[in-house]
Length: 371
Image 1: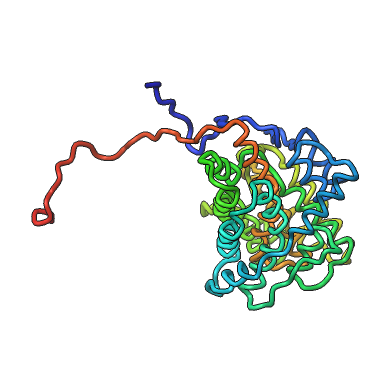
Image 2: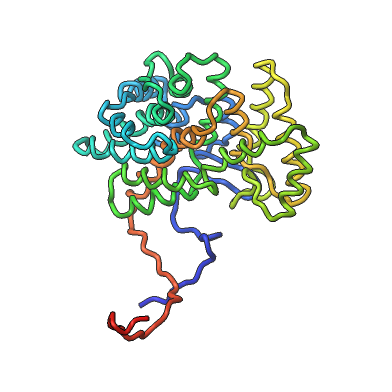
């Protein structure tokens, strides 16, 4: 029997798999399949980037048209899935509703081939995300509009109205930034489940469960709720200092990989500024964010992460806070399916050891002798 290797908690600095999907580095770079996230942010679409992550290369015009058409063809969610969602408690968090819906979709589509299942899940996720919010708020469900691309459709289904062109473009930039991020907690959860040879719905249900946590996807909701409590940049800086003095965690800051800058956060920061200018709104939210970011770096040397700037961007677009984390899932589903595929290409069941710290050699005590 081989000797057990003791590794740091959280597997910090431990490589547990190989991947060709994405790579983030401590000096603040991120690439998808070798392309910088900055380049994709400036030039690519949601569909192009999704194709790249799934298949390892940028699509030809014909391939992109075919891929986009397949997403639209498979985007409509069966009514029985919405029926299940409607039977859940009305005060359920949309992430809980989304998790249940994806699991139910797997039961509904178990006869599809593996490739059909993956295509269906990616295509339906925007409608599931939008309508998990609508259902929990007592609104009618909305089917996708086949004249709209993925990003515009998601905004449309959330709000019920067709988005402005710039709004849809800005939102699409954020979805590109959220699409993949190598072996984060939810991607690792997906790969662990995939290693058991469970289907893609089971694996991605696990990914959604991991994403709900505030230390992962839920940070965007916490970040905007904090920012909305501040009335000015000066107050924000003072309050942040006070919160740190009390030992409180400031959501939207720090990252396991990035030590000086998160490239996605800086792209999102500029997007927020541009969006406020385009919509002719005051830059108060941008100034609040900037003040908090500077104070966090001054006091803790922690950089802002994507969630910190994506949240106020979503807020400026008029998106309800409770749907921020599900939106994350609508984009990250592409990365999850890619990790699912890659895990199965050279699969080995994840089954680590644990260091047992409990008692040993206890004698069984009968019921009449227990105190």
